[in-house]
Length: 124
Figure (cartoon, rainbow, N blue to C red):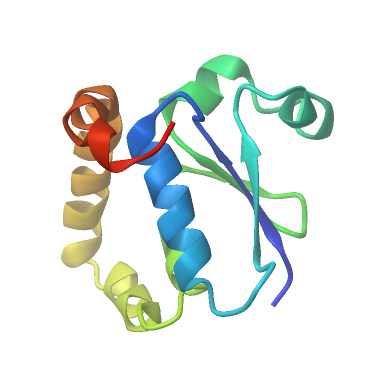
């Protein structure tokens, strides 16, 4: 499986914690590359991803240059995780998919509030 680039908000404790968790559970080393939304590297490599879009939800750049945003990237992330790939099937179930996306959107929209709650758990 080719490396995908996960662009995340480095100023968000929840986002940084999720990136560490994803890295720990990846099916193999280097399946994910992590690039901060705020970095010059992101601006140079992915000019089509605006600062505004980047800060609304994470972005996943696939090897075919396709970029998936937020909840649309979840299935692609999950199928690259050791022990969680079975969840990928849930995204194919028409009744479950909207619920999973709604949960993601709720967390994404409130991530800074959630981050303040868990901040002590994640090193700056």
